[in-house]
Length: 62
Image (spheres, rainbow, N blue to C red):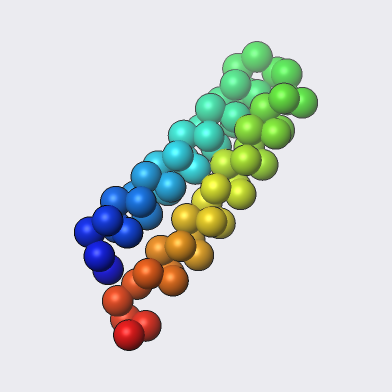
């Protein structure tokens, strides 16, 4: 994998983990889950994008 694509891959996965952590943590602590549900959905969406981006740029496909 190219270094630029690898950095993007790590950033996308990190963003997904942060969104999921914030969404679930805020829901557990403050017990208001409607807006946090959208944050969790956004985290899952970014996570899937990261997975497909990383798999698409992986060197074992070439």
